[in-house]
Amino acid sequence: MKTPCNRGTRTGAIAAGALTLCLMAGEASAQQAASQQAAADPGAHSPGAHELYYGAVLVDQLEYRNHGRGHGIYAFEGLAYYGTDYNKIQLNGRAESNQAAKGLERAELQLLYSRLVGYYWDVQVGVRHDFRIDPRTGTPARTYGVVGLQGLAPGLFEVNIQAFLGERGVPLLRTEVEYDIYITNRLVLQPEIELNFAGGRDEAAGIAPGLYRMETGLRLRYEFTREVAPYIGISYERTVGGAAGLTRRLGEKPEATTVVAGLRLFF
Image (cartoon, rainbow, N blue to C red; front, side):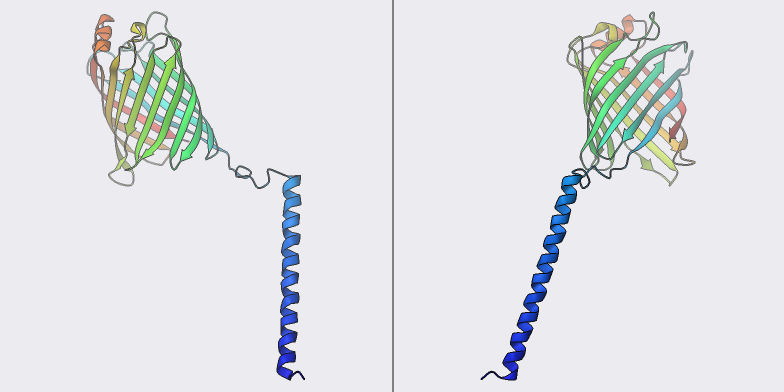
């Protein structure tokens, strides 16, 4: 003979079992519906399905350089990019006039594909072309393949390392490092250095084996806004080793120290 307590226990167990079966059935139905949706639209839940596309232009240096004698030099360096956080197309450009300020001494354009590979680090591949605007002066036209690494090193140093290989078979390596020192929220001191190395000789382009060119600078900018920042500073440039002899052969001095004034733009 069953007691009232035993009958209550059995009734509770039956109810709990029925509730569990209902929950399991509901979960199975939800999983089936999700599977059917994924089959109908395979890209709906992929990592790139909802990526945001955006672009920007940075004119890092738009400046006039004066070394205290003769004509000054106009220089430009900047980049533009468009894409997502993971994949971008990037365009890098730089140019510099000759001392007569009547033409371009150097002009370079890079078209790169940039892929995020870690926190603040991108691997880049693409092509670089050096233009010869004036056939009588300046460096010759050259085309290179490019492989690079760009990002923030520990301590928030901005690093850009690029390797180049051209049709003449001379491998090149360029390393750039810069750092922003915030004196105030708007006043920023930026030291930078660039080193250029070569694994061969290209006399027409002023390239010799080893470290052949270096440039360092110190610029102080005032950010009226994030988009507009005028600056002043000093720049030192030097050709080294065999490249110094090639520079002298062209009738130019292998080193120069210039006072600079310019504008930094971001939009």
